[in-house]
Image 1 (cartoon, rainbow, N blue to C red):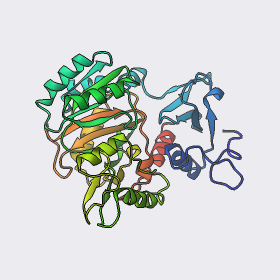
Image 2 (image 1 turned 90 degrees about the vertical axis):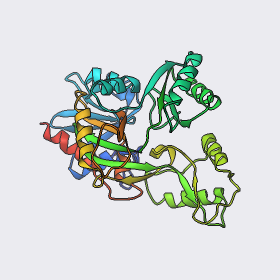
Image 3 (image 1 turned 120 degrees about the vertical axis):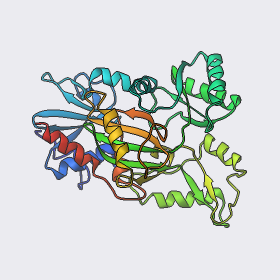
Image 4 (image 1 turned 120 degrees about the horizontal axis):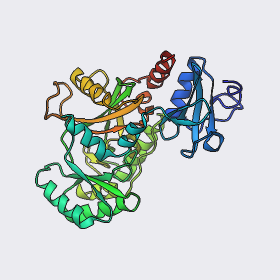
Length: 361
């Protein structure tokens, strides 16, 4: 791609740093550079047919111009230079609604949590559904937007109406439809797929600190955040309102000094943007789950990039109808966590993506 190498590549003295350092686009840029492929960053006002998001990583493979967006979507340009997602349009619409995706998976006899999407103005109906679903949900209820991303506005483990109402209203401030579903047993694993093939698997350990009998919760968090700076990808764990309320349920506050070895939970969320520690599990998950994920993803045409979130009770035993649940399929999955796990081996997902695009011809 003519003229894009010199001034826009990140990491060289005197050049503009990538706006995505440590994020997926930066990992992709490094994979492109390793393979001698030029790239640049562009704003949406420099690209025909693009409205959002605001920045793209642009590169060319086998005469096809690709655009990787800051929202994790891979797009391709047509003959006129107008860009559109590589995903099939119908698939793109379906995956933008978690409840619709779950309905399709359920019809294919793939295990998903019980749940229902309700409009934000129907809080009475939502409360009635919550109360009914709670009777068969021993792990509580989850409330989240049907089209949310990166764990934003997700409330897990709700067990009473006041807490549910508060969570529902919080989500309703930003989203029209709210998904109410049971919390299922197991650890949520992210399977990253390239063209329907699983190339990496990870899971998150919700944010926490371990007591030493000397430091307060606030001090322990400060120490842990300092340790996290050694990883170029992870950010600081932030004490939000839900985190403070979670502390209260453990009988603790910021000034409390946990006893040595005591684990203090700061979040119920296992995704990286909520402060989780990421563990690579590519080699430890039973092959039957990989097979199930690949079968599920291949039911949605045109998915080059997909992140499948599956709650698994025991990854060492084969999958059955009852020991796992598909939580969602994400057609804009970040993959930086696979490159920079807190624990375990790094996986070159960006390289897998570029190699696939090169193989397409």
